Image (cartoon, rainbow, N blue to C red):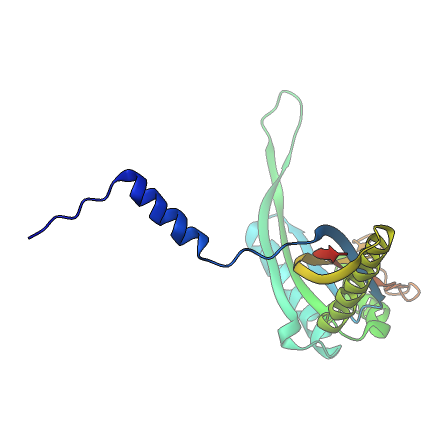
Length: 238
């Protein structure tokens, strides 16, 4: 059996030859990175509100019982308003003691407070004001919201994405023209996520303002601004 010895010099020569046998990398032009944003505004078509009942009583059982009775009336009003079951969700049930505090005396238990709240989605925004009044009449003494959203945001996001892309292409062309070059291609595109920027209209009601003889509660949905942020790398060439 013969052993073949290869010197270090010979080995390096073989490696250089092997590396040089491949094709030379193509020359790259000037790269420019552009951050672009596309924005589209659209009126929302869904409102989310939180409604609930708060009751107080001397003992915990009565506080919870009174709350359950009042809550049944509220849930019936929600169903009567045509809110689908999928758009109704209990968001919190709580019970806590109430104490009376006096200086130099031990706190005295004076009763209990019970709370039950549900989150609902309203898909007929033109009926939202009347719905709020109906819920107050049915026993709701806490109302928070509304927050607005677009039910199907994908088409709006696509429009915003297209705006961002066109803006980036226009700016790349400006750079190329200023340098006496032209845009060869887009090397990469990355999206930093989309965002909805609503113009919220917040509404709060409590025991003092939930009067059934008040005028219809005014609600202004406004518009929601959908934004898309892109980072693009363009290659410019002579």
